[in-house]
Image (cartoon, rainbow, N blue to C red; front, side, top):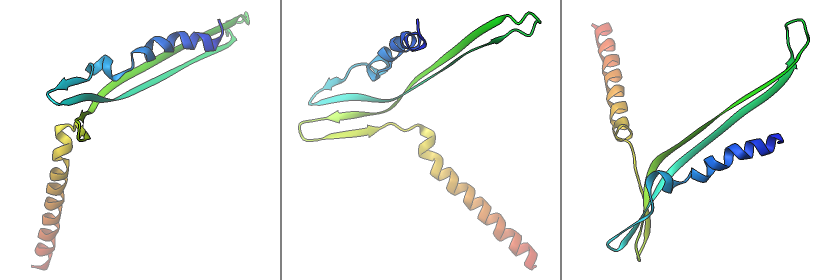
Length: 123
């Protein structure tokens, strides 16, 4: 079997399951809304093959290969579909919400230390 055929045999079963529905389920109908889960799906495939001559003094031909696959899916939101409108409701982790506050707090501490140093040098 040629290399392309071997890779296709590995990739097809993986990509057949790399869907939002596989991880988060089917769209749901709630009252007058349809809620469709939205995910970020990441697929990375790598591999290699090689051949050479053995270093054992017999100059024996050798070959080898290997590979790997990474597949991940993370929720990013949901589509809310009504008769009037469609909107994307984004999911954000808790740390994204407090990141600006934390950054502002650290800048405030830095500015206060600078002011304190200037004040101490002037005395």
